[in-house]
Amino acid sequence: MVTQVTKPLVANEEIRQAFISYGGNLLLGVLAGMLVAFVGQSSSATVGLVLALRSVGLLNLDGAIPLILGDNVGATMTALIASIGVGRWCQTRRGCASPV
Image (cartoon, rainbow, N blue to C red):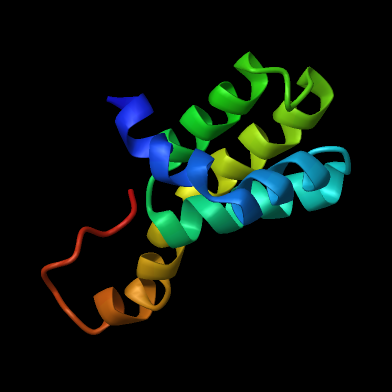
């Protein structure tokens, strides 16, 4: 299943080149992984892309680690954005659970 999801990403030359070039820099690799996971709403697709590039030798281990770390952070961004303002909203409602 992951290979089916990553085929369009691996086929895109710009994405492949971005992953290969950003993977060499720790900060840029983390940011690239975050961006792809946040925009694509799928951390598995990013992991699959990194594994595919790693398996054919286009990406080394030092380049794959920052991309995977950024991918894990980017996968949580949707939940973080959704949680903004929930505390204020719950303070005005009696139905929200209160902290113990």
